[in-house]
Length: 232
Length: 122
Image (spheres, rainbow over the protein chains, first blue to last red):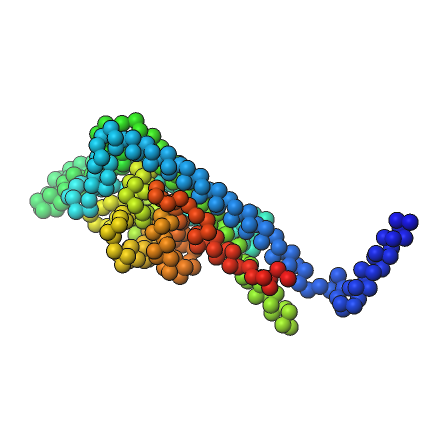
């Protein structure tokens, strides 16, 4: 009984296909449609991940601001503000460089190899040891150059310029928390930790956004191809 | 600029005071007497033109890969964000202390939603 019914259903289905004038094997848009539907599902998943990541960033930032407020209560209301930030006009030998820098790389998305996006990653901060060893090396080279010049008997102006080059120290990385206090309170350090993890979440968000953009571009391309095929 | 490319790209910040101070504590800030800062503090008295000019400047700079902007400030310069279709720099709308994150206002998600119309689902 069930076999007869299923055979009848199959016959009806094939009749419907014949009426439409389309057979399963000859559907030109099936590959495009399949890729479009896969990409749409990926897009929805990534959009959800993006919202979750931003909510996570909001939580982390709130905790950071809370500890910043506690530090302000301890140190004074104007102690932690933009007034304490070093100004570009100040003439200082050591500049301030970021400890969090980013590098990007163009990648192909796993699974959907036609989707290109940029992957952002955090560069490791240069350690203090590297800067001190560099400064020692430069100082030693400067001394060697000075000795060579004294042996060669160059003019005073050239020797003076070499000495000046040795005296210029490389820019050192200062901990941003020191801008506000020489002995920062614990809440300020905690706030810094929260925002450092916030920077990592920012990179996660940037990567998700980049993937979403790549998928959007691919979907637009596939829609154009589909439209051309239906017109033909 | 060659030094920058060897060192890595920067994260720019356009936000209220606490957002800027927070991310500067996180280590993203760069300040040098020869170069411009990679952050801008926006308060109630900041003119809109200044925010627009700073955002356009950050977009033009080749040493900034990511720009963080508070969502309430992003609403004021939405027209610039909508015109920005290049993948780099990535502009991220982040929540501020005063206004929580609203996914309905996020330009990335709005663009994704607008990709599909009722005809596409037939």
